[in-house]
Length: 458
Image 1 (cartoon, rainbow, N blue to C red):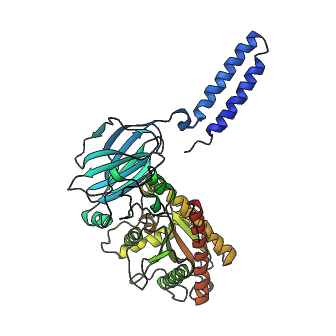
Image 2 (image 1 turned 180 degrees about the horizontal axis):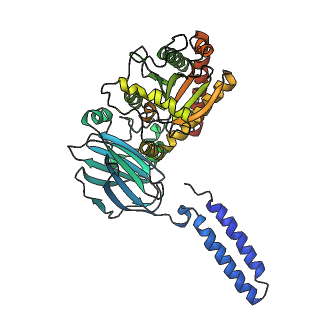
Image 3 (image 1 turned 30 degrees about the vertical axis):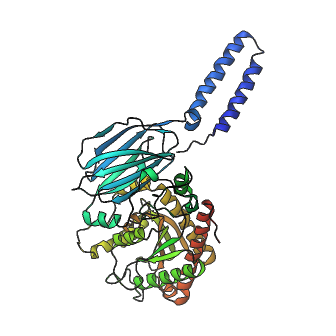
């Protein structure tokens, strides 16, 4: 967590303490002694509040350890550091190679011991790059892992989680991804606005640059918003919820998704639109996330309709991934996740564990913050522009959101179990109202993202 006290603030406090000290010295020797003790005590009290960079410029990577995960589903690589990293990114560029960039000024890595008693991780190499280090993690030829990085919740350490997977999935995940050559990790100045992605391809850094810190600032500050993935819920053999007058959720979700995509293409021509489905077909939940990741999406929007035994229930709901806090949120999650029963292999789990969601929250705090931001934009548009009743912004463990590595929301347009809301959502007028409201939220979100990255919104 960033320290709220800046070096400037500390200097002001210290200067003020000195003034008090000088005034107190005009009193007796006894009082003077007490003043010294008081000022020293105050200094010692405030010293932990000094930013780490102010007191110590050098951060040391003390040790790297590889250990088995407590759930038995893979391994954890711990990078023990004396201060947290500024930023980091994981790239799986090959089925047998995981690459990690850790950005931290003055990061000392001399003779870092690697404690590894597991043959599944063959070796770990470190290479200095501008303002940080590049790490190559070599995986044994007989094992396959999904890699994610996240900061230790209680320490300065950085963790890389390796989750057991299979050859087919990892081959698909790494297809077209370029291996990074850490020796030429700089990026030319003219390419600073080039979009960089965790699962990118030739757009990832790898060619000689003209400015030493180009890769650092490009990675950290120049990620451009230009791809939206729209997911029409259900489809094909999965009709979704059935309405009061037998209207099927899958058809309304697709109609609104296509209208939303049309508005984005027309009014935000610089933004690419990718559909997980653009016709009546069945797409497994996990595959929807894979489609989004392959498209290098900046935002994932999953569109659905709700239902309830209470026929009077009505209104919109917007969800982002996390632990549910209400019974109602749990019921919506359970309904949407039940789709996995229609996928090949009926034994698949239809829920995410609490541990999976906690790890996700640690590893994807940035995505979650932006997901909530976009959810607020959508909720505002529904309430004040579309004049719909809103039931608020909520969290729950939706499988379809879990596999999309980007800010992601699931939108419940309304209740098909309510005959008035079903009639509205089944009409072209209602679908236009809802799609245009979501579009305005996308436009606002893009403007916010572009401003934060100093990118022209024209």
